[in-house]
Length: 361
Image 1: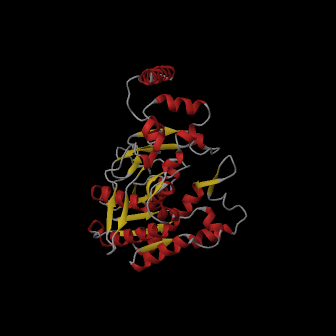
Image 2: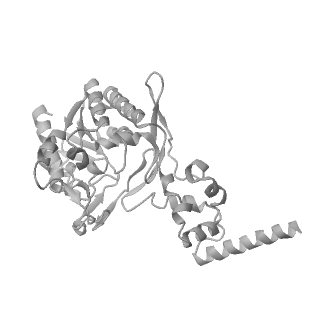
Image 3: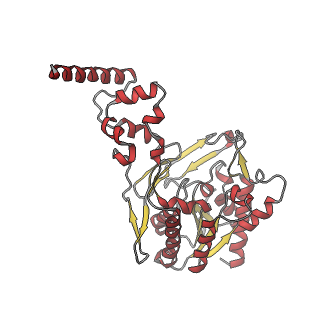
């Protein structure tokens, strides 16, 4: 009797599985984990793609217009172009003998602005030097360093500008951040950094990444179908699993500091100028005091004798004006502020241009 009951339940599940797959036009014989599939559905988007070293990077050879990522009212005019390397367009290149490379997160890549409104593009116009923007959104300072190591030899720039948003030093703590898995560094007792999670995983069906039940039953599309249709899709496809923190914020800042040390000592920067530019979100500016991790990061840069352009006081002076932060940051349709607008990027580009001119670089 028990055997018949088991056979009945199993047969029912098979029928339900085939029916739900047929209803949603899902391949009948696919054995993939559907929780993993939906978690990773945004692994690649209009501008990014999977990268085995960096986790994600710019998609190659794209040309987009009017892409509205964050509900900006003027987004219909945006132009987003990437070259054959996946680098954001910064204007026509003149093949200048001296070149500049910029690396950072979405603030440097140019989120919420058109190609020629990003600060690297404006910097190219101000300096009359070719500027190659090897940045992408969501990166920690660890991924920026890896992007430098991956690309600098082929570009051979004379000036390298690393311009993280200060919060990026905390992203080093993650094995998985937002859209996908990422590389990260750990440090040993002698403060030597060790690269982990490379090649970066593209997908995972492990319990720690998607949950126990999801790992066991995720290959059955029926369960995903039911949870989504009864309004519990967010429970079954647990989006909180898109973040996996493997160290504390304090440890993450320590890693960021040791990355600066390794940048300073790496032969890849031999006979080149390196500049650390600190960018700020409007919240830190309005606070009228740098966050604790920003202060620690600046101290590290000074300790390792890194050239640093800290834009905080310049932004703070602008914050005294009535129309701050709107003067420098895009206002979303929901009233919140996001990335820097054209005026904010122009402000940063001028600060950098003046610094380079003063240094005689």
